[in-house]
Image 1 (cartoon, rainbow, N blue to C red):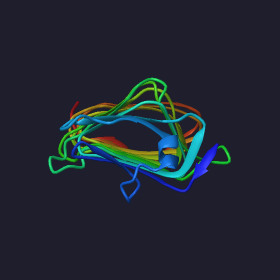
Image 2 (image 1 turned 120 degrees about the horizontal axis):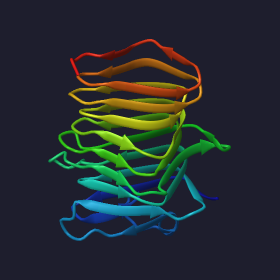
Image 3 (image 1 turned 45 degrees about the vertical axis):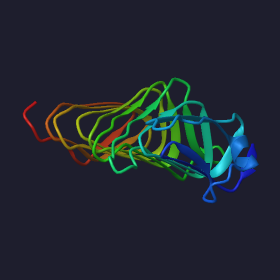
Image 4 (image 1 turned 180 degrees about the horizontal axis):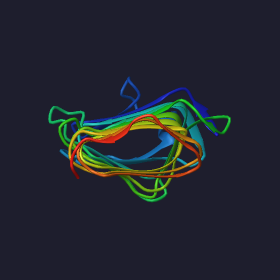
Length: 220
């Protein structure tokens, strides 16, 4: 895989800058295929070129983020929508999307994905993710994922719904409002904290389970 030190992919006010100096550098262009959004656009589409890997990938958007393609990093991938004043932004992905943080082929480092703090859901369709520690947050939306998430631990927070398919050792998941939690996992699983404010909790695990706290606080 091609190696470069760092890639930052920033989107603000309809412009695209690669790296902190705002230059469209050749090595960054080799790593990212993108379509420049039109003026005032709320969505940016991007994808990494197959077979390349960087150390960190940071993706910020003032509005929505739509992912496709394959993203590989050695230490960290950080994806945040809704970073404008409106704090409104969703994250979506299409089938075949892959985000991986690995060292020597083993999930490592961190993968973080946030939607807008005031509005935005996360809909990850037929998409695979891998990292040591994974954080998913949709403070005012729901998180729905199909595909597989691999790693050591998942920390997930959403407002009104959470549906994940995983191969991890630990899941900490919580909903703030009425909605259901559905988790399907393969392998030995620890559940230190799984809480639904008002809704059902359904956990399917193909392997041993250690449940410390699993609780629905409402009447649903």
